[in-house]
Amino acid sequence: MIPYGHQSIDDSDINEVIKVLKSNWLTQGPKVLEFEKALAKYCGVKYAIAVSNGTAALHLAYLTAGLKKGDEVMVTPNTFASVVNMLLVVGVKPVFCDIRLDTYNIDESKIEKLITKKTKAIIPLHFAGHSCEMDAIREIAKKNNLIVIEDACHGLGGRYKDKKIGSLANMSILSFHPVKPITTGEGGAILTNNQKYYKKLISLRSHGIYKDKKGKNVMTELGFNYRLTDFQAALGLSQLKKLNKFIQKRRQIAKWYQKELKNIKEIILPVELPDSYAGWHIYVIRTKDSRSRDNLMEYLKKNRVGANFHYPAVYSHPYYQKHGFKNFKFKNEDIYQKSCLTLPCYTQLVRADICYIGKLIKNYFNK
Ligand SMILES: *Cc1c(COP(=O)(O)O)cnc(C)c1O
Image (cartoon, rainbow, N blue to C red; front, side, top):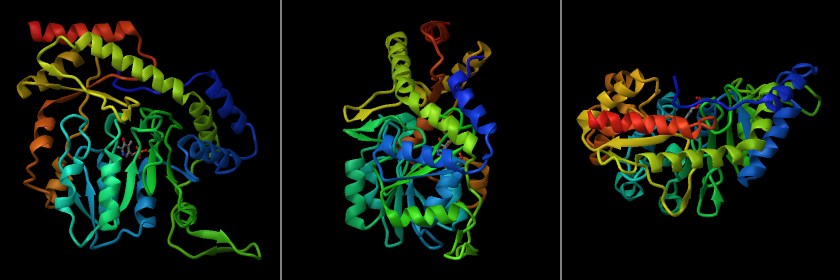
C-alpha cells in the first residue's frame, strides 16, 4: 500500500534520539530549548514553545489569547476537527466561513460579513501547505481588533510572499505528527513575537507552576502537562535540518503529478498562487463529476493507493451534528466536500509511484 503520507526518518535522526536516551535527561530539558530556538530562527520569530502535540498547542494558544465563553471565532470548515474541538473546550462559539475554490483556504472576502461584536479571533489554515491571503486577513483583523492564530500545521517550510509560514500571525500553531512536514512522533509548538504570550504559554504548558525566588514551586495558574520530551526534541532538531530538502522533494512530486495528470479532463488539479511557495503537505485533486469521487477513491484503494479525504467539514461530524451545528450551506465548501480526493505525497515517493498513480486514474476514466 502507498499511504497518503509518511514520515522520513534516517540514521542521523535515530542517532540523535539514542544520544538523549543514553543521557540522564529524558523529559523537557536542554534539547527542547535548542529545538525551540532553532524553530524560532527558522520561521523568523522571537519565541517558540514546544508542546506535546498540535492540539495542545491550539488549546494553549486559545487560553493565552484570552478566548472564553461568549466569544466567537472565525474558522474554516475545511480543517482538522481538533482546531474547532479546542474552541468548544474553552467555551467559544466557532463561526464557519466558506472556502475559496482555488486553494481551499478560508475565503478572506467572506470573513467581514460574519464578524459580530462577539468576534475575537480568526484562525486561518494554510491548507495543504498553500498560504492564505494573509495581508487581507491581517488587514481585516486590524480593522476589527481581532487576534489572528495561524494554523501552520500543514505549512511549515512554505512561504507567503517573502515571509515564512509560522511568522504571519499573533500566534502560529505547528504539529509534528508523522504525516506533517517534520516529525517528533507526537509533538507541536506555538510560535509568537509577543513576550506576554510567551510567558503565559510557558506557564500553562507546565501546570501553571514556577519556581519563586526561594526555589519553592508555586502554582499561580490552572495549567497542564503539555511538555515535549528531550528525545522527541532531538528528533525534531535533526528533522528541521532537512526540512528545506523535504519541501523541495514535495514540490518535485507536485510537478510530477502535474505532468501525469494534466491531460485527464475529468479532474481538477491543485494550483499554486503567485504569492505562495507551497510545502505540498498533501496533494488534493477534485473530480469534475461529484458522482465519480467515491468510486475513484475505492478504485485507487483496491490498487494499493491510499487515497484519502481531507477533510470532512468539521460540522458534518456526528458530534457537531448532535450539538446543533446543522443546516450549513456553503457554496464552495459544499462543492469541495463532494469532489475532493487526497493523493499520496511524501518525501520517499519516486517518479515511478506517481506514474503508477497517474495510470490508475487514467484507467479509471477510460473504463
Ligand atoms: C495535525 C493537525 C492538527 C493537530 O495536530 P496534532 O499534533 O495531531 O494534535 C491541527 N490542525 C491541523 C490542520 C492539522 O493538520
